Length: 67
Image (cartoon, rainbow, N blue to C red; front, side, top):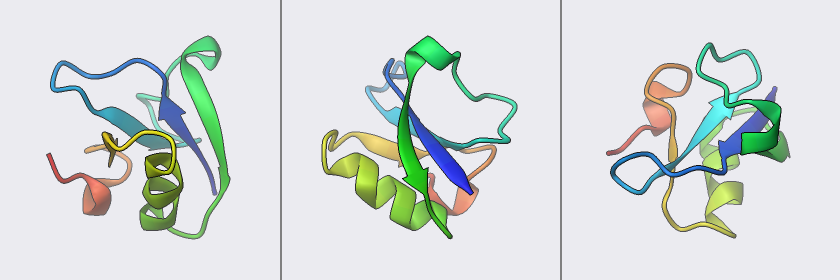
């Protein structure tokens, strides 16, 4: 599954990580491709390499949503 990070922070400062099939996937110009991962945990881990405020989307990756 492909994952993307939102380039725009949420109101709490998080940059959410979304599956490519998420209804809340940001517009193409507002997202950063993270690559293909078998789990949201690996995708969030990848996103945190460049943005420590990365967090899983509450809708498409609830097991990785911590805030």
